[in-house]
Picture 1 (tube, rainbow, N blue to C red):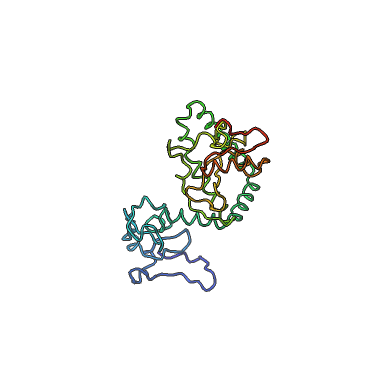
Picture 2: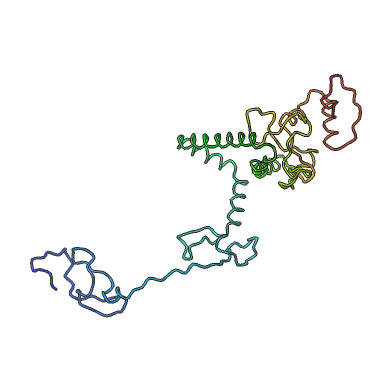
Amino acid sequence: MTPPQDTVYPENQLPQHTKVCPKCGIEKPIDDFYRRNERVNRSSYCKKCCNAYKPKQTIFPTVKICCCVDCIHTGEEQSVSNFHRNHRKRDGYNPSCKDCVREASKRFRLNNPDKIRQWQKEWAEENPEKFNAKKLRANLKRRIQREAIKELGVKNIKKFTHGWSRNIMWGIKPRAEKKGVPFDMKESDLVDTRTGKLPEFCPIFPHIKLDYDAGSDRRTWACVDRIVPELGYTSGNVWVISQAANTWKSNGSNPAERSRIVEIMIGRTKKKVNVQQPSLFDNL
């Protein structure tokens, strides 16, 4: 097929009657190439090579090895379920396993707290509607949890407060690094060994029921306290007390009462102390 005689071509562009296919390397007539559009442009490969082309089928693996050198699995084969999906990769999965990605995220959060806070602040300013909606959802979730705890009772309190110890660990480690005290504690150190659950009442003020859901009364909030401040956040040196007890212990106006609290904390034998005002622990 030849173009009409009255066809006007741009300068330095002449009509092609033959073309070389880069796939088979044979010079063929121009009609053996598919048209790209209504113009005289043709495809790069001939019709025979285009019809014979079959795309490679991607075979997704069932096991994979993490690419990180310091991976906790030490180069062992893992199931692909422990890898995030990534359509940009040929096998369809991320080269690093989920455990390594999680550890890298933790290190970044601990080493860049100011940067993360700045990002959150900028995002809140740019998306005020989404930020307000997220805040309302969080408040609604806390209110539902408080109502459920009241209805179900203390037996099921662990169902709603199991994440409190995990979440509070995120703030304790940076606090220990900032104060320069040792940090060697686990989530199990905050659990009562007798019941296997988080403490229900404050050990210093037994009449205060600990609140793990950040309710309206700040004095009842549960917090982690060091028994001996110099030893830091280590196993056996931490316990869960109320915010009121923690404030009274650090800012108590009665020195004798504060020493009485310290005696209870370190497990010493109770001794009679000359206190001018009535003690809070006379009935213990």
